[in-house]
Length: 519
Image 1 (tube, rainbow, N blue to C red):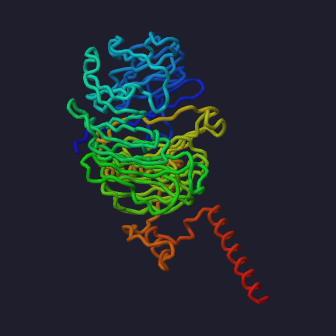
Image 2 (image 1 turned 180 degrees about the horizontal axis):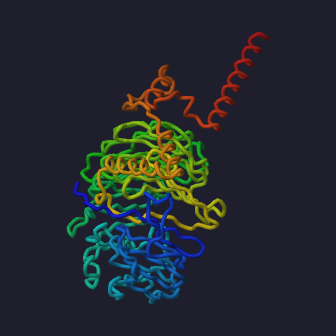
Image 3 (image 1 turned 180 degrees about the vertical axis):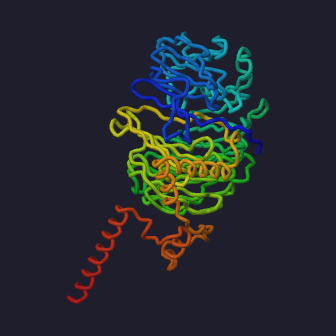
């Protein structure tokens, strides 16, 4: 893998009530970040392009595009009645959606960022989270398409003046997902209608391709989440039903399906615990994926491309999984209505590195170089205790800052290929911590904390063959997989429920014994 001799510095966008700033990312000098070119620029929203080359800043009906090397302004757009805006992956195009009163008014507009010129426009009655952005691009912007009524329309991404160059008919289609790297395939979701089951179909992006190369149908399906891997060879489908007919979950029922573009695999991912699918994420290589699933305490498992379990990550109060860009470290977390527990794993070494907490976190993500993990508590989701926390790869707290009001905290995107191997990066940061330890008291605490919270756990073995719940050695197998006893993995609520069930069993047994004596 080719890497740059001088990797780019990490940068963080922080947006508060008085505007946004660009921080120089870790490792910090004197344990405090410094402000980059921009400081407290007033705005209502900000968003990087996927490759980190451009920054979109919105203030009311004014859109400003910055280039991200020196953060100089490229172009500004005045868009009346603006409702939404988005940059293409490489920052070549700006897409806007405006409030429209008549179909004659084309309210979805595609602009060329460098020139400010209009390159394409269309009318769209309404926009949802599923259907925005209206025009989808592959990561390298070689493929562009949009969903229309009963069809998918393709454009020449270099010349939109040609209009629609190819139409793919998919009757009833309500959601699409274009594979990003590379843009060779597209997935289309058709909901259930008149007794015909819902389906997800995969098509090749080409002029002559009209039949799906893979297809999966399901009953009891309201919505789907479509997740392509890097390489565009596999598609994970989280199928959501609004009602759980088994009455086990108030939030409905979810299933995880898997389709491959070569037709080798089509079916359910074999999850070993009943309950909802909380989160799923592909690794950077696209060769394995991690799933958090099941009733609390949830279970986490890493599977390969053939849906064979590679590693069990244990059970706990988790609903989130984040795989670092290098594919080496994993973070399991319980955010939202869960207390914020986090477990950090070294996937390559098959061992847990540490545990910690980040209560009330709203967003979370690894740094582009894969060494740091940042969580943020932001408004309007939470109006109090807003702040940023940055952790080392092993869970040790590296930096914390509180805000009166924080709306956004994002890493500036960078390709992981621009950074060296993660083991070398980790050693360089550890040596820097040792140097700071000699000169800074606070730096010493960070370094010592890092060492204390990184226990040398024994490597976790690969998962054994499945055993039914009533098997006598189920607990022993669980302990072997997780590196700890099954009782230690239970949350307080789970332990309390377990005790209640045991008391109910004892009560029933006592009643049965007393009735037998009466007879």
